[in-house]
Image (tube, rainbow, N blue to C red; front, side, top):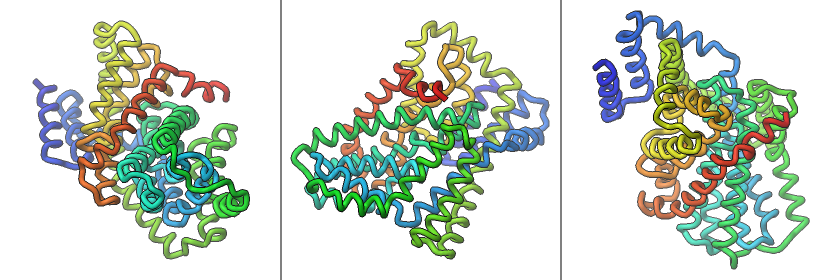
Length: 421
């Protein structure tokens, strides 16, 4: 009865559209009162102990670095470079859209920021070049989701924190799947827009675009190169990213003055003020579940129901795809990853590989109704109806599901670079 009461309370809070911090706080309080020793104050103690970790500093630092570079002209500089490189290729502007989203995602770490920053420039350019409205919307919505899997990714950091998995390994593991999705989207861009070209090869234009965009392009190289070579931890690379972003925007590009920098710091602080209470309750609940051996009990139960790894992967993918339709990615990671990861590990699945599988599943959730965040954002950005955008993203959903299948059943795509460190 106590378990049913918890489920009913959580469902009621979701139906009443309560904030996630309220849902997690109530769930944690209920669990500590009913199954714990009745001392609700332990939530604060457990939450503080869980938050008191150096790796959590990477979250505000990456968010700050992305915000600084997003407020400047970084997107325009990257788009110019990608357009110059892809000009001679059929469907070159579509490929430039995908590549711009991928590179900008590696800078901002955010799907929504990528969609808005790149979309504001590329959407009118695609329409002017003769691309259909449906393709332009679908491409920007889908490529915008690359911010979730392209490192540095805040969802990957959250998964690493909640499951105590190496964030550096997760970042490196995300490179292969991200490149796969970029290649699949680029191949579709060529096949769909074979007759559309944006110009010929111009070495002069490439040189000018490279000169203007080289500092932005070097950002992901600096972060990932430092982590892969072992010079930086994930937290140290985030600090380097902030310093690099400030130096580039203030003294090289000069697109963001001191006032703009001050406003960026203020916006980031407000965002973190909303994020960290949620994280504290989630981590406190995670500590409680671990103490009560809930994951171990679920592992034992599920092992008796699903006996082989393939069946488990199929069931888990279907479950996570459904979760992505009705729950935002942050909530899904905070609530489900500490429970699902031990079950996956019991089935012989590497924790890093499972993390990538989970994130790619939830990445697809950004494009699925009713709560697909990129669909909702695109309604405002492109001023189109909900169902128009849903129809536009359907081909890209199919592409991403193909990518998910490859990621799921080809572990080396994610793990090869990790194993070479």
